[in-house]
Length: 231
Image (cartoon, rainbow, N blue to C red; front, side):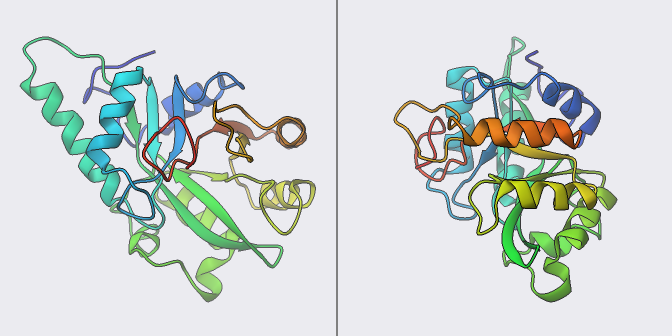
């Protein structure tokens, strides 16, 4: 459902987030929910305000800004939404915004990306991963990244699991053993003009998510100027 910001659920409400994920399917993105978005706070082209304005215009129910190793974009978006709400004489239906970030990690000796959601960005466990640079050494190990997200009260998701040097068939079971919470099941790997989850790869990831009892999420992985597409 659409919520009025900034009333609860909050940006760190993982209970509500999980309840939303239980409803996610191939049609949820990009016009109802979007859990993978980038701004100029990392390697995107949209300002956080431009991104939120687009989200409101298309009627998004919920989103997460997942800049690489940063929550600067999230903070600006959160402030903007709060200003809109407080300055309005009439209640506005605004999208729910969760904390988010994308962390470069190592899993089975290959580089992967792990998305964190609903965490407390002030927590000491997650703050080292929010300084703008990708982690190195032991800090980059997927087990450490997932544990840090959990310690900060968040949930962890393996991003686009069919984009790596190892297959989803290898990576998802390994991530599940490390207590990851979900996988980005619905993803447009070939960046079509009209966003839709990639056939074949989606079915593989969906089957593995179900087998390992993981949440399925969706996101456009927007880096360009349109949140309905990746580039």
